[in-house]
Image: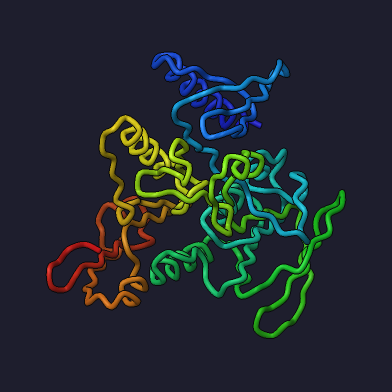
Length: 330
Protein backbone atom coordinates (compact mmCIF):
# COMPACT_ATOMS: atom_id res chain seq x y z
CA UNK A 1 0.00 0.00 0.00
CA UNK A 2 2.81 2.42 0.83
CA UNK A 3 4.54 1.83 -2.50
CA UNK A 4 1.30 2.27 -4.44
CA UNK A 5 0.53 5.49 -2.55
CA UNK A 6 3.96 6.83 -3.46
CA UNK A 7 3.32 5.89 -7.10
CA UNK A 8 -0.04 7.69 -7.12
CA UNK A 9 1.48 10.77 -5.47
CA UNK A 10 4.22 10.85 -8.10
CA UNK A 11 1.75 10.51 -10.99
CA UNK A 12 -0.57 13.16 -9.57
CA UNK A 13 2.31 15.54 -8.94
CA UNK A 14 3.66 15.12 -12.46
CA UNK A 15 0.28 15.55 -14.18
CA UNK A 16 -0.54 18.62 -12.09
CA UNK A 17 2.86 19.98 -13.04
CA UNK A 18 1.91 19.69 -16.72
CA UNK A 19 -1.38 21.45 -16.01
CA UNK A 20 0.62 24.21 -14.34
CA UNK A 21 2.80 24.57 -17.44
CA UNK A 22 -0.35 24.86 -19.58
CA UNK A 23 -1.62 27.68 -17.39
CA UNK A 24 1.74 29.45 -17.31
CA UNK A 25 2.02 29.36 -21.10
CA UNK A 26 -1.64 30.34 -21.67
CA UNK A 27 -2.62 26.97 -23.17
CA UNK A 28 -6.35 26.24 -22.99
CA UNK A 29 -6.81 22.75 -21.51
CA UNK A 30 -10.02 20.84 -22.18
CA UNK A 31 -10.50 17.41 -20.60
CA UNK A 32 -12.50 15.23 -22.94
CA UNK A 33 -12.60 12.82 -25.88
CA UNK A 34 -11.78 14.48 -29.17
CA UNK A 35 -12.37 13.41 -32.76
CA UNK A 36 -11.68 15.08 -36.07
CA UNK A 37 -14.74 16.64 -37.67
CA UNK A 38 -12.78 17.96 -40.64
CA UNK A 39 -9.36 19.33 -41.61
CA UNK A 40 -9.69 22.27 -39.22
CA UNK A 41 -12.24 21.18 -36.61
CA UNK A 42 -12.30 18.86 -33.60
CA UNK A 43 -15.44 17.67 -31.82
CA UNK A 44 -14.93 17.32 -28.05
CA UNK A 45 -17.09 15.40 -25.57
CA UNK A 46 -16.04 16.83 -22.15
CA UNK A 47 -15.26 14.37 -19.34
CA UNK A 48 -17.46 16.28 -16.89
CA UNK A 49 -20.55 15.41 -18.93
CA UNK A 50 -21.22 18.94 -20.11
CA UNK A 51 -22.41 19.67 -23.65
CA UNK A 52 -20.18 18.66 -26.54
CA UNK A 53 -18.30 21.43 -28.27
CA UNK A 54 -16.45 21.99 -31.54
CA UNK A 55 -13.03 23.63 -31.70
CA UNK A 56 -11.69 25.23 -34.86
CA UNK A 57 -7.98 25.67 -35.57
CA UNK A 58 -5.63 26.49 -38.42
CA UNK A 59 -3.46 23.51 -37.48
CA UNK A 60 -4.24 20.30 -35.57
CA UNK A 61 -1.62 18.02 -34.00
CA UNK A 62 -2.48 14.42 -33.12
CA UNK A 63 -0.49 13.04 -30.18
CA UNK A 64 -2.76 10.31 -28.82
CA UNK A 65 0.00 7.84 -28.02
CA UNK A 66 -0.50 4.10 -27.89
CA UNK A 67 -2.44 1.39 -26.09
CA UNK A 68 -1.68 -2.21 -25.17
CA UNK A 69 -1.90 -5.04 -27.68
CA UNK A 70 -3.96 -8.02 -26.59
CA UNK A 71 -4.29 -11.73 -27.37
CA UNK A 72 -7.87 -12.79 -28.26
CA UNK A 73 -7.52 -16.08 -26.38
CA UNK A 74 -6.13 -14.35 -23.27
CA UNK A 75 -8.76 -11.71 -22.41
CA UNK A 76 -7.48 -8.94 -20.13
CA UNK A 77 -9.69 -8.27 -17.09
CA UNK A 78 -7.14 -6.16 -15.13
CA UNK A 79 -7.65 -8.52 -12.19
CA UNK A 80 -6.14 -11.94 -12.85
CA UNK A 81 -5.05 -11.21 -16.43
CA UNK A 82 -3.57 -7.74 -16.55
CA UNK A 83 -1.99 -5.29 -18.97
CA UNK A 84 0.97 -3.11 -18.02
CA UNK A 85 -1.57 -0.66 -16.58
CA UNK A 86 -3.08 -3.29 -14.29
CA UNK A 87 0.38 -4.60 -13.32
CA UNK A 88 1.12 -1.16 -11.85
CA UNK A 89 -1.92 -1.37 -9.57
CA UNK A 90 -1.98 -4.90 -8.14
CA UNK A 91 -3.50 -4.99 -4.67
CA UNK A 92 -1.04 -7.57 -3.38
CA UNK A 93 2.18 -9.28 -4.38
CA UNK A 94 1.29 -12.43 -6.34
CA UNK A 95 3.00 -15.66 -5.35
CA UNK A 96 3.31 -16.63 -9.01
CA UNK A 97 3.28 -14.32 -12.01
CA UNK A 98 3.57 -15.24 -15.69
CA UNK A 99 4.67 -12.54 -18.10
CA UNK A 100 3.65 -13.07 -21.73
CA UNK A 101 6.29 -11.31 -23.82
CA UNK A 102 10.03 -10.94 -23.32
CA UNK A 103 10.19 -7.32 -24.47
CA UNK A 104 11.06 -4.14 -22.60
CA UNK A 105 7.84 -3.55 -20.63
CA UNK A 106 7.33 -7.20 -19.69
CA UNK A 107 10.87 -7.53 -18.33
CA UNK A 108 10.69 -4.20 -16.50
CA UNK A 109 7.46 -5.09 -14.68
CA UNK A 110 8.38 -8.74 -14.24
CA UNK A 111 11.67 -7.82 -12.59
CA UNK A 112 9.89 -5.36 -10.28
CA UNK A 113 7.47 -7.99 -9.01
CA UNK A 114 10.31 -10.52 -8.73
CA UNK A 115 12.23 -8.13 -6.48
CA UNK A 116 9.08 -7.70 -4.41
CA UNK A 117 8.90 -11.45 -3.86
CA UNK A 118 6.87 -12.99 -6.68
CA UNK A 119 7.98 -16.08 -8.59
CA UNK A 120 8.11 -14.83 -12.18
CA UNK A 121 8.11 -16.84 -15.42
CA UNK A 122 8.49 -15.10 -18.78
CA UNK A 123 6.91 -16.77 -21.83
CA UNK A 124 8.29 -15.55 -25.18
CA UNK A 125 7.44 -16.75 -28.69
CA UNK A 126 10.91 -15.97 -30.06
CA UNK A 127 14.09 -17.80 -29.06
CA UNK A 128 15.50 -14.63 -27.44
CA UNK A 129 14.46 -11.67 -25.31
CA UNK A 130 14.32 -7.94 -26.19
CA UNK A 131 14.29 -8.28 -29.98
CA UNK A 132 15.88 -5.26 -31.66
CA UNK A 133 18.57 -4.95 -28.99
CA UNK A 134 22.14 -6.05 -29.80
CA UNK A 135 22.21 -9.87 -29.50
CA UNK A 136 25.33 -9.98 -27.31
CA UNK A 137 23.80 -7.49 -24.88
CA UNK A 138 20.48 -9.37 -24.90
CA UNK A 139 22.20 -12.70 -24.19
CA UNK A 140 24.22 -11.18 -21.34
CA UNK A 141 21.06 -9.58 -19.95
CA UNK A 142 19.24 -12.94 -20.06
CA UNK A 143 22.02 -14.54 -17.98
CA UNK A 144 21.76 -11.75 -15.40
CA UNK A 145 17.97 -12.10 -15.13
CA UNK A 146 18.26 -15.87 -14.76
CA UNK A 147 20.81 -15.30 -11.98
CA UNK A 148 18.13 -13.16 -10.31
CA UNK A 149 15.87 -16.26 -10.44
CA UNK A 150 13.52 -15.11 -13.19
CA UNK A 151 12.43 -18.13 -15.22
CA UNK A 152 12.12 -18.16 -19.01
CA UNK A 153 10.23 -20.24 -21.54
CA UNK A 154 11.60 -19.09 -24.89
CA UNK A 155 10.32 -20.39 -28.22
CA UNK A 156 6.92 -20.86 -26.59
CA UNK A 157 3.52 -19.99 -28.04
CA UNK A 158 0.55 -19.01 -25.87
CA UNK A 159 -2.63 -20.86 -26.86
CA UNK A 160 -5.14 -19.55 -24.35
CA UNK A 161 -5.95 -18.79 -20.72
CA UNK A 162 -8.65 -19.58 -18.21
CA UNK A 163 -9.05 -17.20 -15.26
CA UNK A 164 -10.89 -17.97 -12.03
CA UNK A 165 -11.09 -16.61 -8.51
CA UNK A 166 -8.11 -18.80 -7.60
CA UNK A 167 -5.77 -17.80 -10.42
CA UNK A 168 -5.05 -18.40 -14.10
CA UNK A 169 -4.34 -21.53 -16.12
CA UNK A 170 -2.29 -20.75 -19.21
CA UNK A 171 -1.96 -23.20 -22.10
CA UNK A 172 1.34 -22.95 -23.99
CA UNK A 173 3.03 -24.85 -26.80
CA UNK A 174 6.68 -25.37 -27.68
CA UNK A 175 7.21 -23.74 -31.08
CA UNK A 176 9.66 -26.43 -32.28
CA UNK A 177 8.22 -29.64 -30.86
CA UNK A 178 4.54 -28.75 -30.60
CA UNK A 179 4.46 -30.12 -27.04
CA UNK A 180 1.72 -28.48 -24.99
CA UNK A 181 1.87 -27.58 -21.31
CA UNK A 182 -0.41 -25.97 -18.75
CA UNK A 183 1.09 -23.29 -16.51
CA UNK A 184 -0.54 -21.87 -13.40
CA UNK A 185 -0.18 -18.43 -11.86
CA UNK A 186 -1.95 -15.99 -9.57
CA UNK A 187 -1.56 -13.21 -12.15
CA UNK A 188 -0.74 -13.21 -15.87
CA UNK A 189 0.71 -10.05 -17.41
CA UNK A 190 0.06 -9.66 -21.14
CA UNK A 191 2.93 -7.60 -22.51
CA UNK A 192 3.30 -8.37 -26.21
CA UNK A 193 3.70 -4.78 -27.34
CA UNK A 194 1.71 -1.63 -27.96
CA UNK A 195 -0.29 -0.29 -30.89
CA UNK A 196 -1.16 3.27 -31.97
CA UNK A 197 -4.21 4.74 -30.26
CA UNK A 198 -6.03 5.93 -33.37
CA UNK A 199 -9.47 4.35 -33.09
CA UNK A 200 -12.38 6.75 -32.72
CA UNK A 201 -10.35 9.79 -33.75
CA UNK A 202 -12.32 10.41 -36.94
CA UNK A 203 -9.23 9.93 -39.09
CA UNK A 204 -11.20 8.32 -41.91
CA UNK A 205 -13.78 11.12 -41.80
CA UNK A 206 -11.02 13.72 -42.13
CA UNK A 207 -9.29 11.73 -44.87
CA UNK A 208 -6.06 11.10 -42.90
CA UNK A 209 -4.08 8.16 -44.28
CA UNK A 210 -2.80 5.30 -42.08
CA UNK A 211 -0.73 2.20 -42.72
CA UNK A 212 -1.81 -1.42 -42.20
CA UNK A 213 -0.79 -1.23 -38.53
CA UNK A 214 -2.98 1.77 -37.80
CA UNK A 215 -0.09 4.25 -37.68
CA UNK A 216 -0.69 7.72 -39.07
CA UNK A 217 1.47 8.39 -42.11
CA UNK A 218 3.46 11.64 -42.05
CA UNK A 219 6.14 13.41 -44.09
CA UNK A 220 9.45 14.79 -42.76
CA UNK A 221 7.61 17.84 -41.40
CA UNK A 222 5.22 15.57 -39.37
CA UNK A 223 2.42 16.57 -41.73
CA UNK A 224 -0.23 14.05 -42.73
CA UNK A 225 -1.71 13.91 -46.23
CA UNK A 226 -4.17 16.54 -44.94
CA UNK A 227 -1.89 19.64 -44.82
CA UNK A 228 -3.49 21.19 -41.73
CA UNK A 229 -3.19 18.00 -39.64
CA UNK A 230 0.09 16.91 -38.05
CA UNK A 231 0.93 13.84 -35.94
CA UNK A 232 3.72 12.82 -33.57
CA UNK A 233 4.69 10.16 -31.03
CA UNK A 234 3.48 6.59 -30.66
CA UNK A 235 0.68 7.03 -33.23
CA UNK A 236 3.21 7.50 -36.07
CA UNK A 237 5.96 5.15 -37.32
CA UNK A 238 9.12 4.87 -35.21
CA UNK A 239 10.10 3.78 -31.71
CA UNK A 240 7.41 4.22 -29.07
CA UNK A 241 9.38 6.36 -26.62
CA UNK A 242 8.23 9.40 -24.65
CA UNK A 243 11.41 11.40 -25.28
CA UNK A 244 11.16 10.71 -29.03
CA UNK A 245 7.58 12.05 -28.99
CA UNK A 246 8.65 15.10 -26.99
CA UNK A 247 11.33 16.02 -29.53
CA UNK A 248 8.91 15.39 -32.38
CA UNK A 249 6.43 17.77 -30.76
CA UNK A 250 9.06 20.51 -30.60
CA UNK A 251 10.16 19.93 -34.20
CA UNK A 252 6.55 19.85 -35.47
CA UNK A 253 5.75 23.11 -33.66
CA UNK A 254 8.79 24.71 -35.28
CA UNK A 255 7.63 23.60 -38.73
CA UNK A 256 4.13 24.95 -38.06
CA UNK A 257 5.71 28.27 -37.04
CA UNK A 258 7.49 28.41 -40.38
CA UNK A 259 10.87 27.47 -38.95
CA UNK A 260 12.99 24.33 -39.28
CA UNK A 261 12.85 21.30 -37.00
CA UNK A 262 15.09 18.24 -37.08
CA UNK A 263 15.39 14.86 -35.36
CA UNK A 264 18.21 12.36 -35.86
CA UNK A 265 16.38 9.04 -35.65
CA UNK A 266 19.71 7.19 -35.57
CA UNK A 267 20.49 8.87 -32.25
CA UNK A 268 17.46 8.10 -30.06
CA UNK A 269 18.50 6.46 -26.78
CA UNK A 270 16.57 3.63 -25.22
CA UNK A 271 16.63 2.37 -21.63
CA UNK A 272 15.24 -0.79 -20.06
CA UNK A 273 14.48 0.10 -16.43
CA UNK A 274 15.46 -3.14 -14.75
CA UNK A 275 18.37 -3.76 -12.39
CA UNK A 276 20.87 -3.51 -13.89
CA UNK A 277 19.51 -1.15 -16.53
CA UNK A 278 20.17 -1.71 -20.23
CA UNK A 279 20.92 1.44 -22.24
CA UNK A 280 21.25 1.50 -26.03
CA UNK A 281 21.97 4.08 -28.70
CA UNK A 282 22.51 3.71 -32.44
CA UNK A 283 22.84 0.61 -34.60
CA UNK A 284 23.18 -2.95 -33.32
CA UNK A 285 25.90 -5.32 -34.52
CA UNK A 286 23.27 -7.28 -36.44
CA UNK A 287 22.09 -4.13 -38.26
CA UNK A 288 25.65 -3.20 -39.23
CA UNK A 289 26.26 -6.72 -40.59
CA UNK A 290 23.06 -6.56 -42.63
CA UNK A 291 24.05 -3.14 -44.02
CA UNK A 292 27.50 -4.44 -44.98
CA UNK A 293 29.34 -1.96 -42.78
CA UNK A 294 32.96 -2.79 -41.91
CA UNK A 295 32.95 -2.17 -38.17
CA UNK A 296 35.11 -2.58 -35.11
CA UNK A 297 34.07 -3.48 -31.56
CA UNK A 298 35.20 -1.97 -28.29
CA UNK A 299 34.00 -3.84 -25.20
CA UNK A 300 34.72 -3.40 -21.49
CA UNK A 301 33.24 -5.54 -18.67
CA UNK A 302 31.96 -3.86 -15.51
CA UNK A 303 33.80 -6.59 -13.62
CA UNK A 304 37.03 -4.71 -14.47
CA UNK A 305 35.61 -1.35 -13.32
CA UNK A 306 36.73 -0.33 -9.84
CA UNK A 307 33.52 1.46 -8.89
CA UNK A 308 31.37 -1.46 -10.06
CA UNK A 309 33.51 -3.83 -8.02
CA UNK A 310 33.44 -1.71 -4.85
CA UNK A 311 29.64 -1.32 -5.01
CA UNK A 312 29.26 -5.07 -5.70
CA UNK A 313 27.31 -4.29 -8.86
CA UNK A 314 29.59 -5.62 -11.58
CA UNK A 315 27.17 -7.42 -13.91
CA UNK A 316 27.22 -6.24 -17.51
CA UNK A 317 29.48 -4.45 -19.94
CA UNK A 318 29.93 -1.42 -22.19
CA UNK A 319 29.99 -2.13 -25.93
CA UNK A 320 30.82 0.41 -28.63
CA UNK A 321 30.59 -0.23 -32.37
CA UNK A 322 32.57 2.02 -34.74
CA UNK A 323 33.28 2.36 -38.44
CA UNK A 324 36.64 0.64 -38.99
CA UNK A 325 37.91 3.33 -41.34
CA UNK A 326 36.70 6.52 -39.65
CA UNK A 327 36.14 5.45 -36.02
CA UNK A 328 32.70 7.05 -36.21
CA UNK A 329 30.45 5.56 -33.53
CA UNK A 330 27.63 3.64 -35.22
